[in-house]
Length: 229
Image (tube, rainbow, N blue to C red):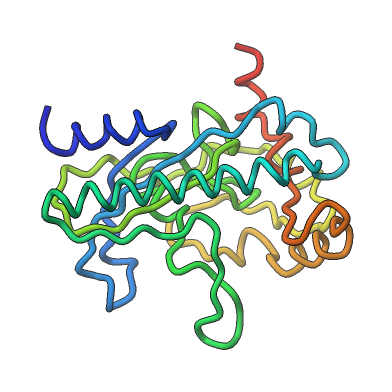
């Protein structure tokens, strides 16, 4: 095994369901362009917990979502420590963190979904979530940026959602626009993030502060097909 295959194997042993390496230099801000490799991981969510989401998110889903995010942060920390021990620079991107950099809106330091498409993990669905062949959108993502030189995985550049609009139709906030994703597409063309956020804030506060919805994830056929195997 070469160096990167050894690392991939370790990452899976640490709990990642999928892992890939993607070239991301061209989509990084200037101060991070030296970290041109994005290591993307996907951790599978519990099908049982996702399947319990019907009209609204559940308390169990809220807890599960946060627990998986914390687990991903632990895995990406281990990846970063391993890379540093190998002599490379490494920067783990928080699994779920929004910062207000420009004083206008909150967003992540770097988009996990961009790294995931570049690394061949999946495509971005009409629900604006990362969708995988194996698990549909029933995953959470993590990213580590590094200057390690690797043989990159083939990026995914085409959506497989087709004419399906189940996520669009079930969205209680009417936030999903129904567009078919293509690379470099702006998030605003897929989802009205403010409408989504306001609906969750107004209707799900009894479940927990910062709760997420999950309806568009639960109905995706790419995820439900796993249950039929």
